[in-house]
Length: 173
Image (cartoon, rainbow, N blue to C red; front, side, top):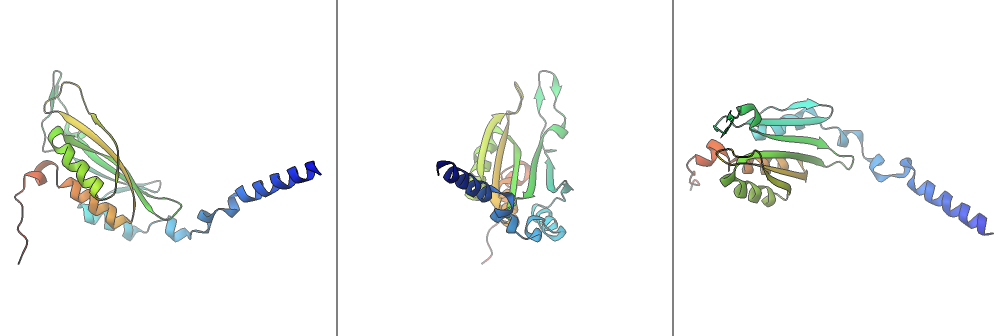
């Protein structure tokens, strides 16, 4: 009798864990594979066209507004970039992970903008040693609707570079 109950429990567990019983498999294929229009919408919101590779849409912003130096000389602008990678998870949500390359004085404002959009800050760390100005990398992740994620990133971008220095616009009456 004990062997039979043990076998029955094992079968129940195996059937309960089989891939065909997962709720994520019931997600329609259209929900897990974003359309070109959705990718284009992200790029349009951010103002830069991204690159789609292996179901990951990557948007990159070079920091051409900076001159960063170390004892060894100038850091090429190609190393100074924000990079965001979007992908759809099996649950149907859009996910984004990436990093901001910020001057130290920009970091708190970028973090506040990310957290304001319900994104998680994974880490904040120096980018180099002995550079001037002091550069930081802010790594983050978030999930939700593609437009909501792109709008949050756009708000955070407004705290960096030339956008940060732009005069504030007054709301129209």
